[in-house]
Amino acid sequence: MPTNEPLRNALAFEKKNKDMLKLPKHAGIQKRPIPHAAIASPYAGSSVPKIVYMSTSTPFMSAVKRVQKFLQQAEKRATASVNLSSTKKRDREKLAQIMRGNEVLKKEEVFVKATGRAIEKALRVGKWFEERESEYVVRVETGSVLVVDDVVEDEERKKILEKRAKGDDSQTSGSAAKKQRRAASALAAAEEEELPETRTRWVNKVEVSITFK
Image (cartoon, rainbow, N blue to C red; front, side, top):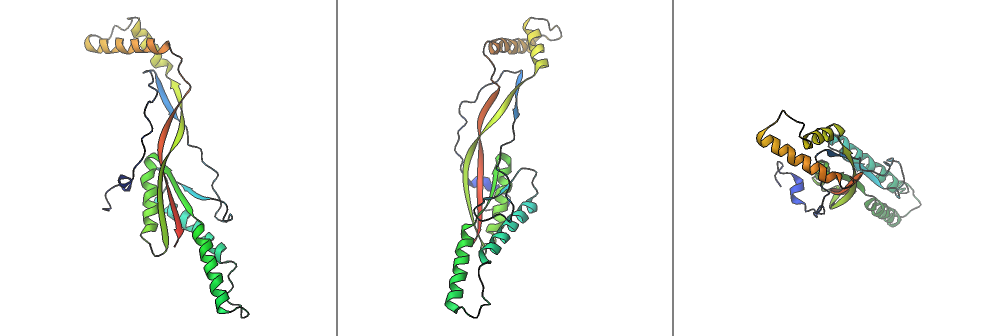
């Protein structure tokens, strides 16, 4: 794949946002942060998921180094019980220990997760490890997450539209005035329905899994 072509172009996402709530002109959306699980320590046991969350502002190499640290600690845990210096163990027993350690290591994944515009950066992190294919296995899964946004009314904008609805705006004329009157009519119609406090939508996400080979 050409390096200048976005990696996300090769992915397919299910379109779930079909009937989005249409808001009146005096209302807008305030996005809430997407809730995440607590970030695990690199020294936490293998049963604790190791996740690196990406945002558009996350430095690329900083994310790569965090993944590397998780993997390095996983390698230390997997090899902690392997004692190759013991003279009491036969070579077959030592080899079995190494194989068991490798199997444990392959099962401990590090996940790089991102949504929306940060997806491309997460894929670039996965690509960095994929290019070192002799060491790592990279797997990418797509999906979506349901998020909640707050619906916020602009009171000043609302007052202006109400004023125009009454014909009190003498500074506009012609087609601009017609547009304003249509907007004011839409405001009057919207006021007949109660404005919700929140709106939900689906956001695309990717999960990049990285393990030792």
